[in-house]
Length: 99
Image (cartoon, rainbow, N blue to C red; front, side):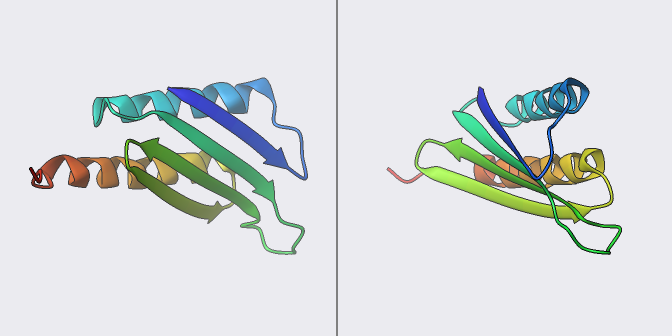
């Protein structure tokens, strides 16, 4: 799976990128049709503690799933986003196929 990561308003370190790639690889357990992923990590300039935004877009043939999470840390946002995407991928596996 090809992963494109963009960090906005900060520079992502290699540990965060490795963590992200490891979590995204887990999605291949739920669907082998995942083509690629685009991930946007943003730091919003607000006084809120939950100012880290993680947005993931997963591409499948003919489909695209988008998940956006705003949390205290990127690691937490990545974990929650991957869980949401896993649920969506499981649901598409159960969909009846049209012929």
